[in-house]
Length: 317
Ligand code: CUA
Image 1 (cartoon, rainbow, N blue to C red):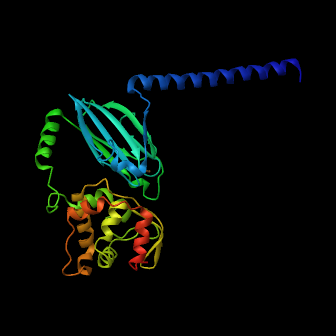
Image 2: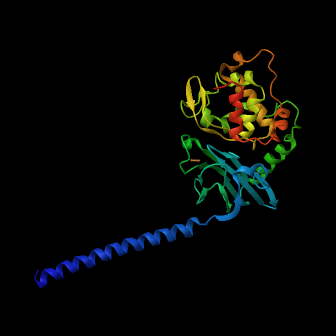
Image 3: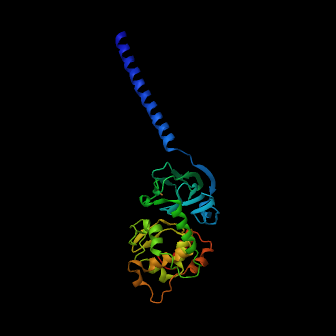
């Protein structure tokens, strides 16, 4: 090519270089602008947390909100397919909240709308960060790491209340809370426990999802009749292995729900045994579950595989 043509190409090269340089610069300016106006933080590693021993860990045995000092709170959250525990975190506005999170099974996300909170929750790791909500309201939380077939149902919320309303709510809860175990689970709604923790897999109508999550409608009373204590063990210790329900094979994992209280477990077990027409298939003299049933079985060390083996010995496919 002759000299002039060569020059023309170089001119256009310089222009394109200038355009891409300007684009990069504007991206950097936009990022800097959003960091300044929206704030930022990087979650710190808060140490290790073995998924298998979460229930005996000081931090995660009873996840939720604890008072640390004046206007300062500790929030612990456990993620597991497909729910956050607690599902809803309630905080007063303007409080300094120290969050600690871990996962019981696979990687989940904890994304809070209208904030920069977007945490990767990794099994075995504790993610920690601080945040102060300056505006009352309900902030939706969603899992933003694909974690399985019901990932899209893994939702939670952070409810930020005006200070007066918060103390009213927490004061009222403190007065009604500690129902001594051994009494009827009247205060806890089994349906609420089910909707919060179980419905994302077993579905609100108890039908499950064929091939993925077994139905409880029609099936739960079979378990009860085989051995009344068997569903207690499934709820507390989980279940892993291939099972068959109404001819369909399931090979998923039922998580251990031992982070729920004895009262909540008894309430949800009674709900499941009687909802969706299951009551008709229950023995007439069936004794309802009590929190004591769960308190007694909580101590036994069983793995989800051992629960599966037990299922086999009961003659259940
Ligand atoms: Cu948990 Cu997606």
